[in-house]
Length: 437
Ligand code: GDP
Ligand code: MG
Image (cartoon, rainbow, N blue to C red):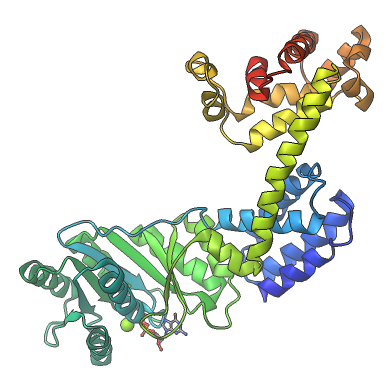
């Protein structure tokens, strides 16, 4: 179980004072193994752990937090990001809105069709029509009818006609006449991908031009789920994924891999056979579920806010004493980067926003500056006055920049330090940083 595995690996870090390459290595190895065992694609697991490592080492300054807490938060956020970051709704526009359901046999299409109709009816006051497009098995038509009756939603079926394109078109016509605002077209699947099935569903899609095509996949099929998703997407270019049977003994890997492989959002998860066992998919909630540690995440968020306030206070003191150095400068840069887009940030500062409007700044703006500072020795960062001519040359060579670049940075730094001291009474850090760009 992915949840338990991750929990165990975080425990390893519990007694540690701070995150280091060495003590985080074992945890990362465990995280990677847990992901692989959960059937997460190898490449994804690898890049996932290297991102987590990078972030974890970069977060060392968060002394208020225990390393395991920091790791949980980082892993949580990266998991959510891997699953798409934010929730994406289905399209229910159109008169009527047409939703096409595709997937292999047994994936849960018919069940999902019923659940979706039920959700739209009860939560969004829609008046859906279900369409029995699985024309090959009378039992499939009967199954949809039973579901429709159960949830009080009409079902369009035609036992004589064996042409799903015709059936779907006729159903949409009926929906218009009967004021059904959503039409959900259930279709036939095969046990494995086959050309006839693909052609048929392509033809249905072309004929009815749905506003939303959903691909339904059994999450218990692990890596196969991802492969099937890829093949369906190549043919159908669907709009979203429905992961079913997440209530079972599923390892959750499909949820983590599908998004990055087919680049389509997961929109729903099925969690049981009953008509109300359907969850709207939210990446962050799914990450909570995978980690089973919702509380820690908010705890860490609060601690981070706290950290930023503490740091700011310390910095104010240093500035007042003219002790601001290149290490502080670096940590300011990383703070600013953490806050996201520089331009957005700058525009929140009164007076600065307008001045910066036509200037192009992006997160790479500090790259050269950071490279130069990284090439300084710790002593030089602490005491910029040490940096004489020969040191400047060494720093320039080490950072792949020119002596002029280094000179310019040091000059800017000196000026900023002066400016900061002057402003330190009513000081505004961000305004000063604006000067550095
Ligand atoms: P279809 O062939 O794609 O239409 O699949 P069905 O809707 O007929 O579902 C196949 C089987 O999976 C049925 O026995 C369903 O009850 C079951 N099923 C579908 N979705 C879920 C789910 O989310 N959880 C569980 N436990 N069973 C499900
Ligand atoms: Mg079916």
